[in-house]
Each structure stands twice: as C-alpha cells, then as structure tokens.
Image (spheres, rainbow, N blue to C red):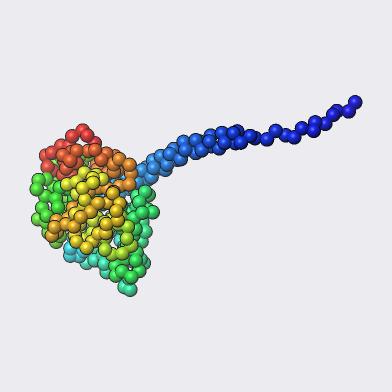
Length: 315
C-alpha cells in the first residue's frame, strides 16, 4: 500500500561531461564572434555608403542651385568645400552665420576667440564620420590649441595632380587653376567629357590620431589640410602619403603610412578601415566599392573628368 522512497541521490554531471559542455559552448562562441563582427562590419560599410550618398546628393544640390560644383579650396579667404555644402546637408544654421566672400575658417564665427569647439567648424555633423574610424581617429579638439575644429573621413577628388601643382594630363573636379589657390576650379557637370559615371567625386580617408593641431590628415575645414585625396596612389596602398614636414605623426598604424613631402609636393591616397577597399562616390551620384586591387591605370583614369582615358573593368 505504501510506495517505497528511493534513497538514491540525483545523478550529478561527471567531470568529462562538464568539460564536453564547456568545449561545445566555446566552439559556439568561436563561431558566433566572427559572424557578429561581419554583421557589424557590414552595417558600418552600409552607413558609410549612406554618408557618401548624402554628400553626393549635396554636391548635386549645390550644382543645381549654382550651376557648378563647390570649389575644392581657396585662399583668400581660406575655405574648403565643406562650408559650401552646409545648406545642403541640413546645416543651414551654420551657413546662415557667415559671409562666404570674406569668411576664413580659422576666424570667428567658424573658430571662436578664445579658442573652443563652440565655433561653426566645431559643430559635430554625423556625416563627417565613417563609423569604423569614430573610436580611432580624433577631432582636433585640444583646448590648448588655437584653432579647434572637427576632422572628417570624407574628402574630394584632386585627381592625378600634386597639391598646388597643375595636373600633367586631364583635370579633376576639384583643383586650383595653374596650381594657384586664388583661382580655384569651378567645375560643371557638362565639362566631364569622360562621363560623370567615370569620374570620382569623393572617397574615404582616415583622421589623425591626435587631438592637437599638428596632423593634417582628415583636416577637412583647412585649405592646408588633407580635405582631399589624390589618384596618384591606389586605395589603402602601403606607399606613404606625402605630407608637409611637421604636420603628421607616425602612429605605427599600417593603414596610415606617411612620409615628409619634398617642398610642397603633397599628395595622399584614399584610405579606410573597411577590409579590402574603400567606398567612393562618383559624379553621377552613385556610390561604389573600390577594391584595393584596382590597377593604378584605372584609378588614375577615374581621377580625371576630361582626360579621354576611360577606366578598365577591374573595379
């Protein structure tokens, strides 16, 4: 009538079973982590494409309103293309406070006195940045510097010319006529005889690691800075960027090689933290992935708008 209770203890895991479970969990984690990293990398690349697409739309908006693209840079006054696009990237509150005919980037209201990040060039704008470089590159926000400002990861195409020098053959959308900053090129889409779909507009670049004013990489507001890239070097090349003496710091990052330019012979490659290539916007408004393996001949052909040098099919 009465059931007999079992006096046996519940069976416990053996050491071997426990080790097997731990090994299975470790394998699952090892499989999951690369997958998560790939998803994050893909999301970052998509965001970067979106940023470049917004810049391209802004360029076309400026062209529609002014019948030409914005100037790449000029002096005097000292300016770059960035402030000209503020009204077209929903930053009219910035553009409404300056006189484009006279405004220098390093003077109020662009850079306040005493120095701080409260000037127009210190405003953080989301599409300045590639998400993969946010935690590595720095803005120029050292409070002890004279001209604090934001850096950026998106720069314009200066083609096959060394900065402040005329191109050997063919023109880029952004340049100085005769190599003179006082005469910036004012480019129209109609001048692109190679075709807007065969001409680079913008690409990625990497920001300096230092918050101080002694590294020009990604210095997009400064006409002395690297607000541009040159197609004399292929994307993410191991060949160094040529930067004026005293205006870069060797971080040891293999993605950011640099050397001292001879005189004012400055040029730099398109660079990114995406694996295998860079995102680039074209003058037709499209954004395409350019692999590091693109040939120099094709890359240089994409750098010109009127060089009669159609690119190959290796991009």
